Image (cartoon, rainbow, N blue to C red; front, side):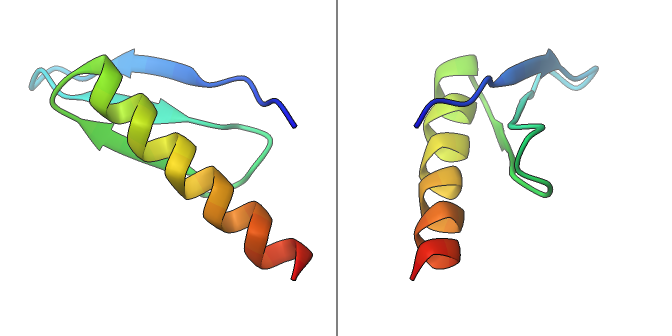
Length: 52
């Protein structure tokens, strides 16, 4: 399953990553890569919970 991840650089320098097709699935990181890793882990957890 693939989802599009949207990224935004906040004014304070943090990155936010969000999966719009999964409401509430967003994560902050010090780098874009960190935000992506966190949001991917959260998306997997949400999907697993929904299917179990």
